[in-house]
Structure formats: C-alpha cells, structure tokens
Image 1: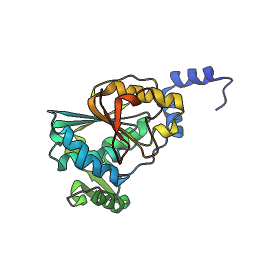
Image 2: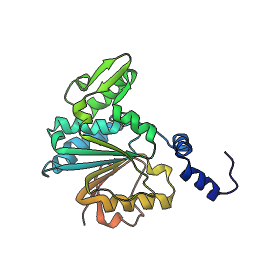
Image 3: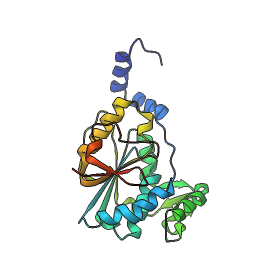
Length: 229
C-alpha cells in the first residue's frame, strides 16, 4: 500500500483492525522451535527454576512468544520439577494469528523428532512423546500444560507493564529492534521484574549499554540476568 506520509499510514492502521492485523502478519518474524538452544533450557531447569521454587507462586512472562513452542518447553520443565501447578505462564505477542496457534498447542508431527532431541540435550528425563497426542500429522500437547498459560496480544513498544514477574523470557526478539526500541523494551522488563527475578534474552542479545545494566548480574554461561536491586 502507498501512503503520502507516515501519519496517513498510522491513521489507517488504527482505524482498520483487519488491515492492522494483516500488516502485523507481514512484518513480524516467527521462527521458533521447542527447546531451541538446549543449553539455555538445561540451565533454566538445573539452576534458575530451582531458585524460583522457593517462592509460593511463580509468574513467568514469555514476551514475543510467536507460535508458543518455547512456552510449552518451559511448562514441561516446570512439570518435571513439580512446579507447574503453582506457576502461571503469561505468553504475549504482537501478532494475533500466531497467538491463536499457540493457544491450541498443536504443532506439526514432523518437528517432534528434532524437538525430542533438543529436549534430551536440555536434560529432559521423560519420553518426550508422553507430552502430546499424535493425530493426522499433528501433535497436540497436553491440556495440563496449556491450562497454566494465559495468552494475550501485547506490544512491547507502546503497551505498559501488566504484572510483576519472577522470570521474563524474551529470546530473539530484540535483535529485530533498533537501539531506542531495545531500550524501551528493557525498561519495560525491568519495571515488570521482581527483585531477584531473572531476565532471559537470546544468544545474540544483551542488556549491556542499556540504562538497566547496573542493576543486573549475568549468568556465567547464558544470556540470563538476575535483578540485584
């Protein structure tokens, strides 16, 4: 579509919901997989979640959750640590279409072999196929997992904080933002994170050179920061 200026485009996006949603689908990136970067999930399971286990209730925010594979990955870890029933996973994304996929918890069966291998490397202890039912080329994940999830549309740039969290996971989202948008997002995460909570980013992302870095201590191996003050 051609517009005379940015204001004209903005007006169209605000007044036409169908156009806005189509635009979001065109410009957002939704590459994800279960237990992507298994070493990250191994640290999450063996070091981070056991610390959060001391809390009576655990709130986790997956910002930019895409089609939800990483949300289900964390839910599986919580179940194996007997923490799922006292945890709530808030999963948000800008794109309403991918959120609908995430809510259903149904993924192509052809991906399960790779996901199972990722899970094994991430120190998964069960038979991965126990977590889903295979049917007509798709894998539907257990309702026990999705019952602990809340899905909602959220814009990291213009929407505010909506709760206080013990762990915020936003992996491979900020790399698509410019410096100003990265700063805005990091300030939002800082505002939303409880003291001694954890912020997890993607392998190519960092909080260095941001206004929040002095309050955080990075894990020695992974892009995980603990909020110290």
